[in-house]
Amino acid sequence: MQVDSIKSLFNNHKEKALFGRYITNKHIAPLLENIKDIFTIDAIGYSVLNKPIYGMTLGTGTKRILMWSQMHGNESTTTKALFDLLNSFANEDAQLNYILEACTLYIIPILNPDGAEAYTRVNANKVDLNRDAQNLSQPESVVLRTVFDSFKPHYCYNLHGQRTIFSAGKVNKSATISFLSPAQDQACTVTPNRRVAMEVISAMNTALQKVIPKQVGVYDDAFNINCVGDTFQSKNVPTILFEAGHFADDYDREYTRELIYLSYITSLDYIANNDVDGSHGDGYFDIPENEKLFLDLIIRNVSGYADGLVDVGIQFKETLVNAILKFIPVVEKIENLHGMYAHKELDAAGESVLDENGKHLIIGNENDFVILKNEKIVLNPK
Image (cartoon, rainbow, N blue to C red):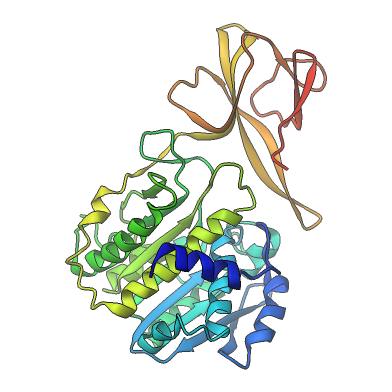
């Protein structure tokens, strides 16, 4: 399917009730109610704090695809795009009927509802579910494994979000979307099922390069059997890690959401129309590996420090305040940041940059604004 056609589908079916980064069961429950007569939707288990974990089945095809999002509660962009996808199928758009005729999808929109509500990576027991694939110590982990064992997927989509710090290689290009075909052994062997995942990723990368050239990355494939993706890959099920990253000043991740939707449709179209055997996956190896080269903001050429002119690197700390997500600017680095990049840069041109009390900035301080040349400059992206 052409990129322009997918963009049109997205614009027609974007779920307007979901916006921003804070997405919880309370946000998706009414949406599930709206489509309960179209798809099979059940509470398939409960979280530590007894919140329902929803699962849904759609399609009748023989190719089974398991998709789960918000394993980390504060990674919600892929969840928003899932509901855009569900709307596209629920509206019986003839353009997409062939996917549900070829495939059966099992979707868990929020695996970690406690973490989603608290806006944390971990669950209510402070366990990272993506390190619990072997111990299965948490109820949420058991829910996912039970679905995996009963559904017997041919493909797994492990849906995540990544921080603003990643570049797509050693260049001034942020990694807006990243992927990984996880390892399944300590040697990181490129096995047949890894190659299948790589082939699907290659198809998505080809589409994404048309809209975000050089802004797709892959993660290091170091093996960790405690990770869900590595575990499912080790069970010989092609598994794809999706990471929704950052683009320009899109801190609500609304453009990234569209790119994830593009990735969903592209990959499902590819699987529906092809017998994927891994023979066309070499493009995966052309995707640059992510590097941690970005800050949210860099103020260059700042005076007033013992080392002479320095750069001040600021990272935004995502903080939930009364159910509203705030981006708090925190001074992360004060040094020569040559070789580091930022989503926004300011040039102090040799002037001092001061905090609200007229003091020089120090590492660890939270500063909503700074003073440069007697001018107040707001740092918060909102």
